[in-house]
Length: 200
Image (cartoon, rainbow, N blue to C red; front, side, top):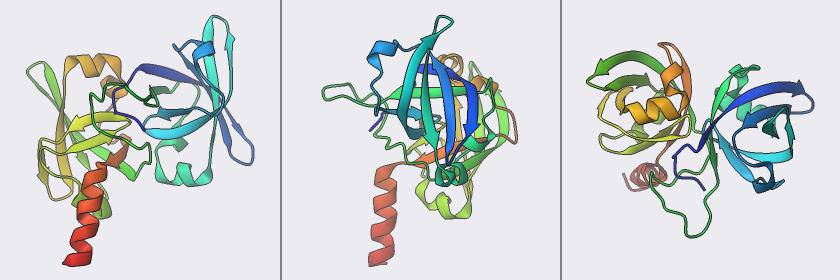
């Protein structure tokens, strides 16, 4: 489990096609603090560490990305140099400062507009028809692993505000119109929608 509070921005070093895709990500974490088999959310997708090391003064870890994950996320667009939002999994007693995030991406959303509002930036996203029922004003959503509050919803488009701190500490500062981000709906919204289907 995660909270949607990004703790590092890593960089894709290499990709190797095997049965799955092996991805090496350089990061700012201490190598000794990363366990083989640990879960790290990479742009919101929960991936398992299969190798780790340190080279040229940088820690790196490897993950295997399945075809299923590539089909449901934006990870298929990664290339060497791609920046990646990283969050290590929760430990018992950790503060939950965002919202409960599972790392199971529901699909991707497309950036439809970007506009400055004071010091913040307003991003508007379009979601696939099957996911719009999970997005509600003032509800939570995880975009590329970042816990955010939904400002407004108009059919399949919703908006969020990104404050300067989040712009500086995540990959949001590099997004442009047309970009796709990983979306995970709030787990509560999923259950409410399912209950509504069953009792409606």
